[in-house]
Length: 271
Ligand code: KIV
Image (cartoon, protein in one colour):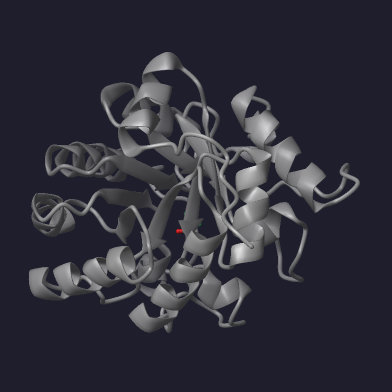
């Protein structure tokens, strides 16, 4: 029996309160009920059912082949396993190309998948779609910096926002997505100073992955934290299994490292 009651569930306004109080937000990805329950037990605040499942679960070379049906399946499994964390489901490639498609597909992640928020990759160009989702009662997490669904346009998985013009564009995009009603912002692979500047300028929490310690919270792909997978690892990845006795120990170490500001370190960030 999954989904053990762990007390008062965390809410989206609760995440904004954590930012205001200075408490860091610990977020991890999960794709099934067993790990969702383990993350909940370890005190993870936010579970992201990421389209990274295309790579770490399905063995693909990018997230592009992931479909809305795949996402609904994994979201529903995660929702059965967790009770306290805020649950976010990723909108896959091309699933939010226009407003109608975005409303229908985000509605499925919420209604069939049991998610409380959906995540959309992209900048100011998706501000309108964000506004329409929020107007329809669907909370939105924005995602800027390295957006893996645009890997081919970006020319690979590389740090974004090093050039001044690019940094200014990311700052502008962050503002316009907050204005459009986004409740949370994932910043992936941007220099830590830029992430710090954005975090200070927004009222909504920022969750970093390869974005340095100044973000309001951190997220990692679960398999990376567990030291799984044979490919090369990004600089920000820390294997929490290396010093842990078991998986619950590694998950708890991640949560306390994020909460106490010990993860990420400067050597795990980009200048
Ligand atoms: O798909 C995913 O897991 C993500 C995180 C890496 C932020 O988008």
